[in-house]
Image (cartoon, rainbow, N blue to C red; front, side, top):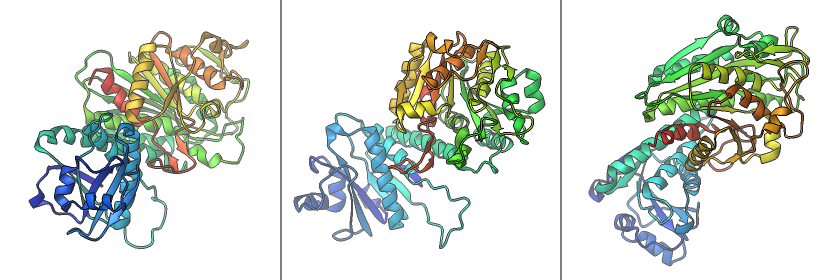
Length: 492
């Protein structure tokens, strides 16, 4: 789906579908819309054919020089939000696809007291791209491939630059989210740690990022006992993926760390068979970091940013880690293995230590870490833990702007004590009670004094059901939040 912003000129308008918007309060103020269709919206409103109800889509085929006019309801002005705009965008994309529209024109007339036109348009375009997502790579399709429509945004001269920037941001962030979705939806036999590293290299080449990939020998040589230990039961070798964006070098580089378990069977502490096929998604945090780095490279913030993704499989085998084993993390911390299914925190511990070794600050890690977080928050919110109130607030601000729900969880010394071991410095599981909080406290040990935040996307990284612009399967959770955070961290 292609988008372009052009100056409103009624005489040069060529499209097969005209898209008009309507508020629940009526059609007043829709100057461009009424001018284009000779008062059609007003007449339909008077007849009760449209109501402007949010997400209501009406297709009109009569009284118009176009093949069809699509009227998109936006709801009540004072209740309109960016999230509603995304949902409306998904509905619009579905309608245009169903109509097999080749070119649609949309006059921008969204302004209301709650959301600016630019904010509304940005969210609407995001929703259209996200709602139009499909993963059908491995399906044989019957019939012809559907052609993606071009959407022409019509604007007044004074707002062309502002709205053009909004559309650019929307396209970048939504395409990056869909990139993460693609990686998460790939089968585990196709997206191995080596294949994930290749994807990262392709992203780096496409968007001008630096990329370094460390193999098994280098990982072991560095002393990354978490990453090398978790991978021992698998025939696939681990990778440490490092992506670098160079802005203008103002301040310390931001660090993003993503969990890259490309398939998680639980190791010796084997998972139940039901639902295990979804464990291909245990690299959703790593996918989010790689995709966010692609967006950051296109948005060009002033900060330097480095993404670190430890990647491996967690499988049972004769060489696999066993409960009771002790390993050593990159910073020298020894960890007793209580459950081999608590493996994500082991590779993230190495990833966070590596980020600190590079001097990155702040550091944000993203992971499908704990089922306990899903139990606590349901499939709605991502959990957030941080050792810095300032960082926590910045992440929350970015998530709200991105339309991704994040809930701040308690980060307390008492949870860290649940991870203390009698055999080693730490143990990798603090038990069922407060499991998400003790897992976060375990990771916080390796952040030390570095400002750090942890995002547990176990509830949100993979959707069992489609809803609006969120499709079943990989969601691309936190891609937009991470990219927006980096820009907001520097005041952009």
